[in-house]
Length: 91
Image (cartoon, rainbow, N blue to C red):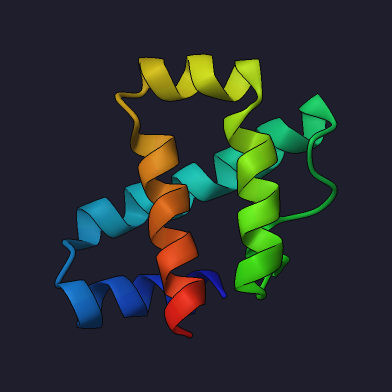
């Protein structure tokens, strides 16, 4: 799913390879963090349902650790999750 996401960003939106790499790493980092926080079990890339992802994303966006990290990261983490959500909605 991770590679499909990267290809989709490249083909549909002409996102640079550098930005694609950052978004892909951001989603991996959020997966790790949210597993440690007890918000998530498993990898975000294993979620292929848009509805399921939206539910999980809501819980992530409500997590204080995520909000703080996203703020420090200039909203890159939430941007990555929003792009992944868009990918799933169009898949």
